Image 1 (cartoon, rainbow, N blue to C red):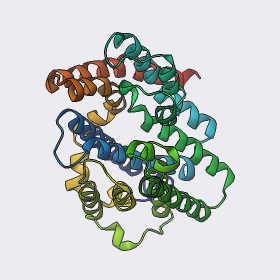
Image 2: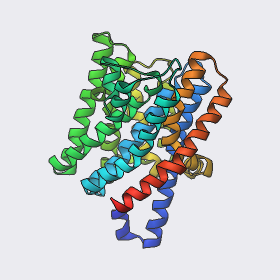
Image 3: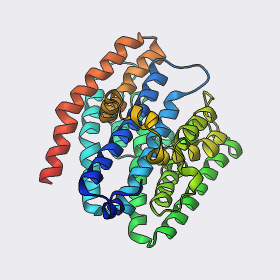
Length: 340
């Protein structure tokens, strides 16, 4: 499937709209799969694999694909792009940080204003390593990487002309970031979080996916990678490469490129895969995924470090997340997008 603007030349408007809806459905389903992996990995861990880490990689490669489409194919105006990113991310994040700071006061995972400020300024992935850390906010590192990637890709969309030049730059930056992670972990002896929380390392997951997205849109993705089974095979290969409770650079050097290929190859996948991802449960999980991701962390900490019962804690995650989604996230995003 080509990008929508190109497809509209050859297809009737109704067919283009239908294709766009189907595409959005299975991408929402991919997002639903991502949060499902995180929740299973945190509340019902599977021995031998860190599904939480893998779920974050699923999120990252999807973000890379979507940002590649929005910034370089649809050429979304940057002012509108950042307004929509803010309305999508910040209201729910602000609610979570304030509610967690108040609600967790007096508990063993209570945190103070420095950690809260780092989370709200998207600096936690570095502040958590160098300055202050709070277990209830540890998941915010991944939001920081995403926000930094948005800025990086936006700057590239302005500064670099020509899709081929953009792809070359994205690949070079990805390789440098991956090499940086390998050197940090293997040569400098930094532990996993010090190596892989950092944007200068983990941005590779997002940039690689964006580069594959642009190759696909330009018709430069090799034909053998457009098979109906590539998405499933590449995704399964990536999962197998992450079969380690603490992934090493090997998993990122090999597994992440496969996962980036998988999310971009969904457009060619058979209905057995896209149909599953487009199912209502997966799509709904995808719609709630951001709120679920925000709220799962403190409850996960109580399960992982205090032995609390997983099922009641997970039920509490869904209760908080759905309240956040329907009372704050969705209304705030709609209001900001209409009136800002």
